[in-house]
Image (cartoon, rainbow over all chains, first blue to last red; front, top):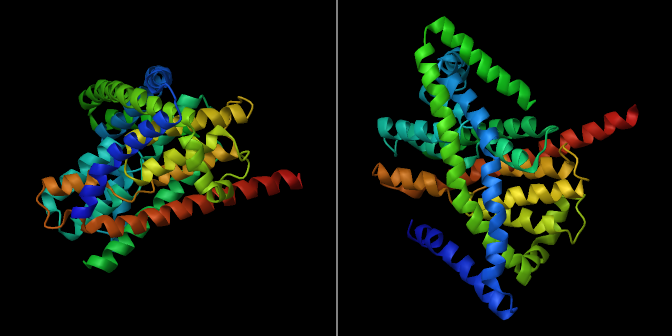
Amino acid sequence: MNWLTVVSLWLIPMILLMILLHAVIKKVPAYDVFVEGGKDGFQLAISLIPYLVGMMVAISVFRASGAMDVLVQALTPLFAFFGVPADIVPLAFIRPISGAGALGMMSDLIATHGPDSFIGRLASTMQGSTDTTLYVLTVYFGAAGIKYIGDALKVGLLADLVGMVAAIVIVTLIFGS
Amino acid sequence: MVHAIWIALFAIGLITAMVNGRLEEVSEAIFKGAEEAVVLCFGLISVMVFWLGMMNIARKSGLLDMFVKLFRPIVLKLFPDIPASHPALGYILSNITANMMGLGNAATPMGIKAMKELKKLHGGKDEASRSMVTLMALNTAGLTLIPTTVIAIRMNYDSAQPTEIVGTTLFATACSTLAAILIDRYFYYRKIKRNGSR
């Protein structure tokens, strides 16, 4: 616990200091170079707006309409068969689709069942162990202007599935149910 | 593929709303979703400008190259079609490292920069190259050593041991990352084989 918080607290300042000191040693005009590099950042962030608006509107419509609930309800028996608690199923589905949605759902599960309950631990592990596939895809390929994404989505979703199964297995093994 | 997913999510949502009589919630969701996306992008501006600026210093001073040299054998194995001294490697490494440290904010600008370099390498075409799909796969798998956000939330809810999930998270994320790499390879070689037999 302690060393982890220390590491995450010290990491960024250490990296920044290293970059600055190395620039001094190599006699790089650091401030000018910083400004020059930072200019791209604004353009890049703004250019993402249409991609994210399109994707996030579709996702929130899907959730608000109740379609997400229908999907989850239809698949809950299947999950129950493998010993997965029903409460966790919506999180497993929303995780690859919406990062904010998953974070909200995880907080909700932790608030309801307690952070140290089986479901709380499983939700934490699921949330922390993977990134939001659809978001990463939208942002990275959107910014680079890639239209034909090949097998990227399939690879991402299949890897998510493996991650979810791994989370369930390891949490059950370590913490029991 | 993204087109199909987008239309499916949107159209199924709209039709379900009509059947369920949840049109009011859905029209609200449209504006909320759009607003959320714009707020997210504006939030990205500060992070992007800052980290791209810092990375530019690291690149110009040669720090990024030193870093790449250290991990070159691993990265070249993962991305065999990138020339050994290409700038994309530096950004890819920074992206992966930032992700591992749980610095999602810093990882995104570097990942985007890496994608842009890979696009140049691919002749500026608007189709994803092999390396782009691999980079994507690594990012969606989200290899993290310290899941900072989750720990913070667990602390908020008075967990007796907020960090007890670090081990299980590490295991799960290692599995999904390994799976991402293997599945990516599998699809790539399957495509090669198919094109070859034709």
